[in-house]
Amino acid sequence: MRATVGLVEAIGIRELRQHASRYLARVEAGEELGVTNKGRLVARLIPVQAAERSREALIESGVLIPARRPQNLLDVTAEPARGRKRTPSDVLNEMRDEQ
Image (cartoon, rainbow, N blue to C red; front, side, top):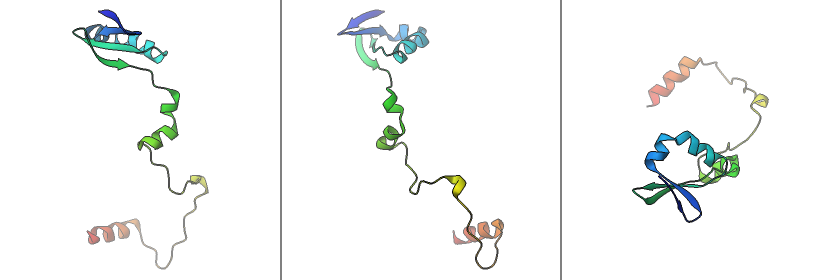
């Protein structure tokens, strides 16, 4: 079932389920659609803006936490070993002992 709610075309849940890819393509192209359940508007499908996908938006929303000391990983060099050399197994065993 299709109707118009305000200035937005509204579609029923069954119609959306049967033709989801068609309606999502329209939303991706910039349209807004309403979704109805038994004739009552229950949801809106709106396009995601490019700005919402950006790194800054992800940082602002708390989804992305930037590095504390951003640097090029290719420029990072290992620090020379100090004192006796420990194998990774030694380090792992020490970490287990601390728990």
